Length: 111
Image (cartoon, rainbow, N blue to C red; front, side, top):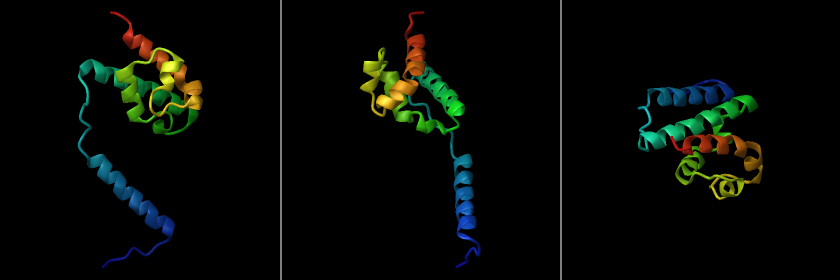
């Protein structure tokens, strides 16, 4: 059995590199919705990415995909409705709620 001789940190970096290779070579994600719902989900992901870049954090720390999917399905229109979504607590609602509610209102407007 071959062993990697190096520090714990070097072994950790090697393991991370192997994970990244797997992720890069993985098949693209399948769409889980019809076209209009997928567009709404993608819009919420864009909002999340903008907020994440502004705060210098990974997007999943803003809201997880599961939370965004529930927002697409339930279409909350008020801060109270937003609190009923899984993954949205008082702090996240106060910090990010307005941005997501604005995006939801935009795609719920009649054409």
